[in-house]
Image (cartoon, rainbow, N blue to C red; front, side, top):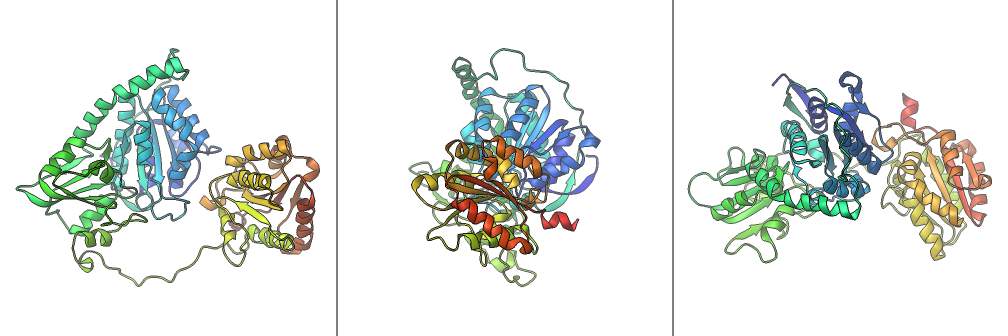
Length: 527
């Protein structure tokens, strides 16, 4: 160990990736993963790595795969719903395999602090037939990142590293290692590995299935999976994973008095699970996210002669985050003895747009423009502007995923609704909105698209956007939108009446219109 640093979980992964000799990092901002890339971005000159935000997660994954193809080590990071966007190259990369070590860091968001769902990325790793590492601490996040690169190059597969919000966004002391140099270029020789024509894909998929036995054996001996049986037979055994292991240790208040298995590397170490099950009468599974381990353990008919407790039987809540108090309660311990609040709970503060946010003026104009219509429809998607759902604006009615606003508006218009409008940001438009607009322009769908151009990726910390200003206008017309129905407004209260009139004009145009509401994010203005 060289020195100790105080790091977020995200930063521990980022620093480990730099020390592991990456040549590049790719990502799209999304809480709780954003700080990982930002850390590497700040140090890219010092370490000589490529680090620029990608257009979206699919692009980021493909860019990372291309760097791995050249023989270089690379990390790609995203939040859990971002993995949905990257699912196509992700799934196929399990079949192609990788060349240079490639780590996929996915930060899940149990409790949906800033997300549409709380899906568990471990299932994606299982689906892809690749290993997944799940740290419990910032130190493990650092150490497992090093291990992930080693496993990736040994098995020729991408390796998933799964974080959750509480680990990604909390700090701890981390002991670091001496960095290694970057890999030399060593391009994959021509031979079909990365060309998934059926004749090649069958060969590659057969290889992926054969290596599963080795991956299972590696998991069984991995130091990331610790089985502690103690002496004698106990009535209760505990299986933990990831940050849930911290909650378990805090709940017992010291060395656990019962046998336990900490799972940090997948596939699930079946032999170690079997040894634990054989030594106890009852098993409690504590895992953050979906009941992946519990489901595998119970199967369809349960474990003969054993009681399995966890999320599936209601012993632990199926939704939201775990914490030490919840774990203590299910273990029959007094909550007050293991976890007490040091301050009184703060009063609730509902999320709201920043004072002076341009979106507020945009939505006020939009609301007035549609007020005279019997059944206006306004779709949207994820971003700062989603807060337009709340009072007093009450302006939007959908939020499903990045870019869905345009596509859903098209479908609503096809169904016969009128007027139909949608609202999305400039960065979201570049991420996933362009393809929806391309189809709408081809059909000249009777709808009005409002692009809220505040010049940044505001919701995740004002990162640089790829489409703003005149560039955004050129993209819109390049996708086939009639320049006569591309309007630009300035969302300020002094322009309110003029903006309302423009929105009404474009609603009345029975075809596709695009209105760009352009004013810089107030957070950028502050700087």
